[in-house]
Image 1 (cartoon, rainbow, N blue to C red):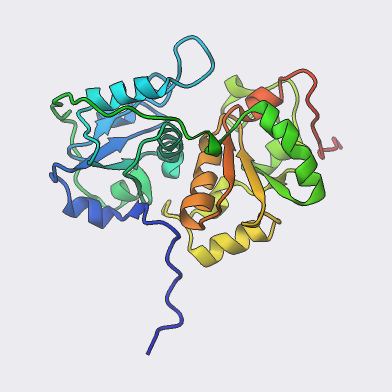
Image 2 (tube, rainbow, N blue to C red):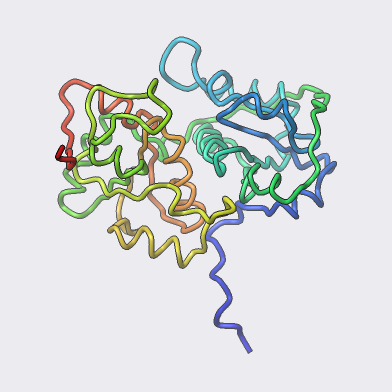
Length: 293
């Protein structure tokens, strides 16, 4: 007899548990990569065998506000000693914000064999699992050439063109920021004044679904049923073209992951310029719902 109460499986096999990772420590074909907002956390203790990626230094162009090229991504993975057939397991702090950002960026760059450790660093540490300060030795490889997948990235012009579809009900805009950022009450996330903008508010027609609503208290993702109710309740349905954004795309990568990898939404783009670009740009419309008392 089928158990009708069993949770619905996620659309894609892209999550592994902390227990699974613990069982595969030392497996030469499983490569752990830690990606944190706080780049010093890795040095205080990390999973045995885990490598470190600095999301800004390693992923961003050193001069232009853009990403490194697919050729440079191949070189980065080669320096880390990763082979084409290795299973890459990403994890990090902030309930996997930055690991999800790395998952999205590497997917955009054409990298395959990516998964997240569900719950990230938070869950591993809470369970008292093994950590080390030892940095693994790396034998460089030649990682194959890559090609960008532009279907999962949105640029400012794409968002502007998307507004007509949002108004007509064919598209959806998902703002992952806090309610106060969305309303325009504040111009930056709490404790991040350096990432403020000139104008507060949101992109016209956007629906506000803060990223944390997709996560449980231990940092793991909520079930398919809970995620579906969360997004569909705001009109973000799988039949629509969806663009997600936050301030620099780290929180929206978490929601992009939930929508595309866990729910199987076919057309979701991440706007990495996000509010730091839109809120500062000349000639772009905004909405603001906060009214000072």
